[in-house]
Image (tube, rainbow, N blue to C red; front, side, top):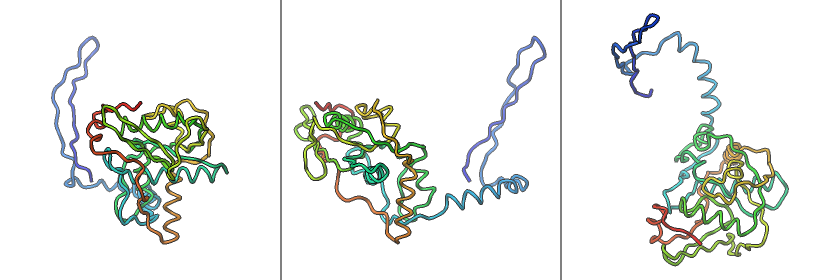
Length: 263
């Protein structure tokens, strides 16, 4: 049970034409010393059982956990989600999807080591964001990656890699696909992302205002289905291999202070 305090205020209510005045207050501790009310418990019991049956169900095991990391550190959770988005978008649309971009802000919790439950995934993604596909010119894709680096030292991506070189005052950013092929600024690419980013852009404003192709899938459902499939095959949920960003240590503090501006 969560501990806290219940505040009781005493107010004197006025007669017509008079003002109310404050008479005092009292704090009541809310902790384990307060016994549950049997009548309330009886009402809540069936609903609690339903919630526990739904959200307590174990989907798979995560022996290492998947963590977001701090700025400049590998974002294993974000990389896993971006990979799922690209794969699910390609399957749902029947199209080649070249890359995926999402935002760390949409991932609200880590996946801790041990059993992964339905509740675990809801904690990670409490929002009803949907998976969409947008078309981007290569120059806009590169710009979006750079914006994500400037704001958060890199947002989660799939099938992309960005490298910083030079100095924080004179930085150079190189963006390629995972196999090392450069992103062509003039080419058109299909990119999986969330409907939220396709509308607002968040930290990657270059994504905003696009006409998205809807997949009909919620991001949370994509993650739930992936974990459930792993569990059925008795496979563990493991962090993706490889890093999506190469950022020298000299850039980390300036990036944390948002002082790096990428041309």
